[in-house]
Image (tube, rainbow, N blue to C red):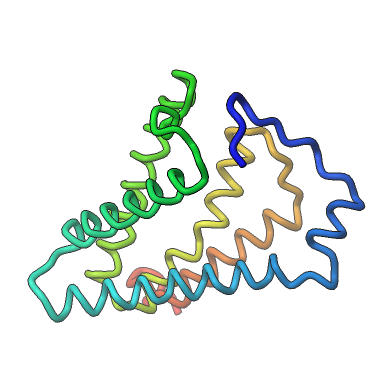
Length: 174
């Protein structure tokens, strides 16, 4: 049921956290696995389509965006959100949504372009570094804590990616 106005979610208590995401709940893990499988299937389809047709990555993005917009509109309508509120109720919400949309477009465009040009394994490996970049940006822009072990793991992940991708200057050093 949809309620008008701003929805404020109370902070989760430890009891709520255990109920939702405790050791007996596989929902968080299943969600991550489903997301990874979905993105992997999407990458495979993009690579297959670009290899076997004349469609470029931007045409694929246009089709994906149209389908995604249709599904989002259907979901919003089904949950009872008035159409005038689909893009937010406040100007700041609309501005943030537009910014998020532009950044999402750039991210998807770059990802699909990489998938269509690079070997699929290399493009997928590069895409998996997004967690490192998101953590670094959260530290820089949001002031989130980034402890030494997390920074070391991020650096290790990027070094691992460099070794897997074998860039020419690094290969000559080895």
